[in-house]
Image (tube, rainbow, N blue to C red):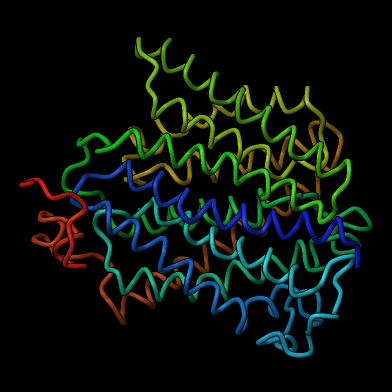
Length: 392
């Protein structure tokens, strides 16, 4: 065990959980109407709790167990055989478990943005549970757990390069979000603006800070590689924020706060897969392109395809993660066949699994709330609470 590595990953684990609670909850919560903000908080918080338990029970073993190239097996279910002295590289294995658990929390939580303001709470819990175990955990094994897309797999000695989750996290969550949005259909009123741009900015700022643990921690060591990953993460986020705001100003005459901070998230998602393989100049390029590319993707999904991916999960996370994964090959840090082939394999798998789960879970619990519940807002109708007391 290396004490410095262990100390850094303890911090990184806390930072990645901070991304979900409270970062993502505030970011998404501010973007919806006032009568639905608590439902968003509830979704993100409940998913964090449920994924943590399931990661202990089955998820970690499926992702990082000693199974085969496709499936990690159940040998490490409930951390069987793992104690305080067990090691994973230079880290206590229980710490590696906890660090990866925070990734298993935020990935299904990202999907929340696609279905806010109209989805059944029971559906959220059951779908998220099954999706993490059947989709996310196996993909994690394929790429990070020594599976068939990793080094020595179907793409030869140099497998796919995905440093912190361009494919594992952002492509899977983005595509799942798109599928659910299509099945759900649009909200009955799509024109209401975000109720609290201030919440959105605060949540985005927390995500930005937490992303240092997300990308910097993925080095799994306290060294120069972690420092570079952290640095390029920051550069990409800053550049994408500016390019998004500039593009918004050119197109619409005004640069908005919500646009600026959405650009931040686009830059962070895009640098995520490449953060361990590129330098600052590449990060400038990735961020600069991401701010415009993801903004145009929002326009295509929302206006041209008329898909109500409410908070633009696919356009920002999905497109960003896919773009960053391809840029690894553009900058010569990964093989084209491995990067593109893995995107296709994981993409098809995610789409199939998500479609099947939406249909199956919909047989058990309703996908969408009724008209009255949607009209009155999920906060009071589903959870019996209001975010704001307008009478006092």
